[in-house]
Image (cartoon, rainbow, N blue to C red):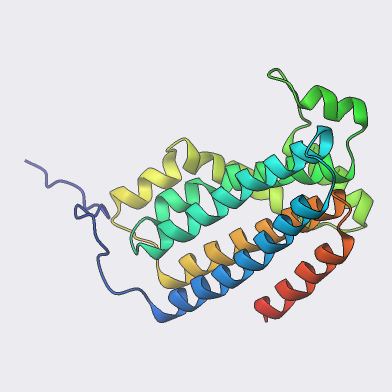
Length: 215
């Protein structure tokens, strides 16, 4: 009778080992960045006009993006849920792309159509191309190249299952890369949405703060 395959599954609900100090440090930096962005959005809401139309839609997108980003951080902070954390990268990326598109590119008619139950958005690759053409960069185009592998994780595909079958847990470097990538996507979305809400100074400040954290 063949032996069962190894698995990286953790059957206890608590952390399997003390959290690596580098991950703990990255999480602390993330909390500071998170608080800075949330403060900017609170001021934007309190000091600006009523939340209607595009303004309401953009703030709602930010709340969803914020929750995805925080969930990834909390899962990695628990010390053993990197698989689930990585599965959240696709909804984080797609909601960020859509938020940036609504903020920077979408026409009033497209925004009105998007803000319905049957709302439609361009695909990730199309949005990335439009954003990069606007900014004269290739950041978004390079980022969406990861969509296929992220799709594998969100739908429990071969890549995700093989890691479990082979008993291959995420190491510290992979967790750090995941945290840094999530923070980068979160930052880009927050900057784009703040700019779309007319808070260019806040958007610029967030961009500068991110560069300091990323050093």
